[in-house]
Length: 152
Image (cartoon, rainbow, N blue to C red; front, side, top):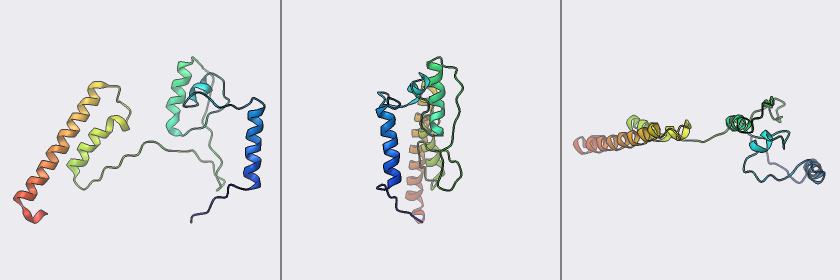
């Protein structure tokens, strides 16, 4: 059941006063970076908040900064009392009504979803093959409707 969130509470005010105190004392700042990984890797931050999707970015930033410090993933506390890891990433929806079209759509989406857009040959192979499969599947579906009107 949906529970309405209350932000105008003494606990929220206390949390923001604490964060403001960290900022005023020079223990927290607004980064110029778009993501916190480079600040974390350069030892300008004790922690960086993210999701499982951020782990490769942290590892890459650590390598780029030549930082061999050990680091780990810590869960957030949750209202249920069990630790929780934030899991999110890109979402793609491919409807499976027509399997051939779904296959073609997946071929087009795969380089982005699986992260191999930098592999130029594989990227363009999947994009072109996916478009061809979608076009042929659409043509086959139209032919089926044209030659077998009962399938409409």
